Image (cartoon, rainbow, N blue to C red; front, side, top):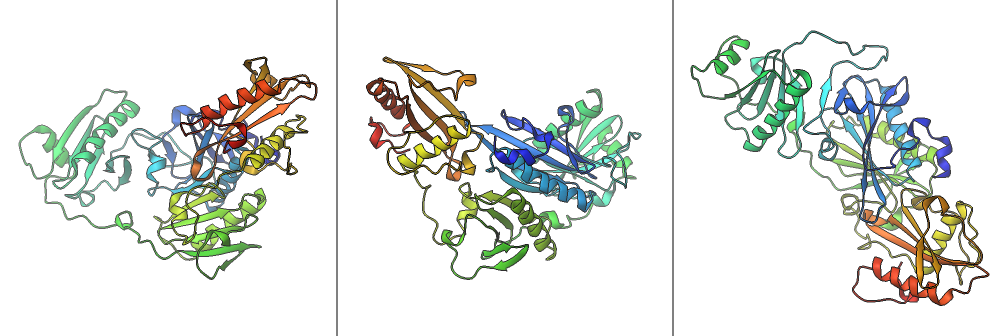
Length: 477
């Protein structure tokens, strides 16, 4: 675990240890684990932190952290969610991609975690203005959008909310109606049926009736008649009125800003990777999307300050709510970020063999392992790179004659001077691609040099993507 974990909130202890979704709600300005039975419920008066952990073939983990801000949450709670997100990232090794999610403007990635949809609810945890309360069932009208992921938004229960282009769901105490606009998409109609089934099971104990009402088809069927009676009788409905949700923001020429002592200053000149210093934070304004770039050797407090500065800077410009804000760490930039630079080297930089061994040596030394003699040439920089502090997969084999014996996890770090070992660390490098650090450790009293070299060759050929065998000296990791 990162040394920075000492300053982290205890609520994050053990986070990201297995694939899946984890959620915390901000309560009295502290993150509190949210019950799994309530995943998918988001109260409009609250802010949440959502961690999505995914596993790669090599066993290492990738992290996406989202902080969700309800439309009725206080500014202080939203700010707390943003700061605590950075603390959570620190305990995960400081390499997660972070996303800000505003209610009603969530990213497809965020929505994909919850099947079939998320349901924003009125109220919130005690925060000085309102509390969630159990109320009598009342009719609710939703507009249901999305072909792959569902965006469910509650709209006023009124005939004026209906139109010919969208699919609507009317949830009443005894029956759920699906109203298909004449111009609505067939995929959205299918997704709406999934949502109805979810509502039926979640809020009606699976026992209420379901009815389909098609726009423009006036017939004597009771379902259609009942539907229109709820709106005061049938009458023509109007055309769709464009809202902020329907506005597609244009991407503008990117502008780069540096963040120094809480001040935002534009960086002049052609955008190139060389402008980004690893001890600083930057803002990249692309119009429709804003990135906060964090240098890998910056401190946690500096990262918190950069996020606050970004919120204040763009908040003062009254940007549309649909503007996306994404935070990326140096070495883990996504293609969307890199595409804005004129001179960003293609592909990720390959780490040299000696540098790779040095990094693993530093990683092992942090765990209390004697690493003398691991690197035979240049001195090892024993400061553990932030990107290797956690989240990767460590495998160690002890060489005994021609056999390789895997060490149990509890024995990793116990090296005997009479033995030789092979250490493989699987992690993710630039562009979140899987990468490997492979090294061997020679006990000062060991005579297994030949066998460890043969075993090294076997492992190197297993992890290398090319079809040829390699000697240890030619391994590109």
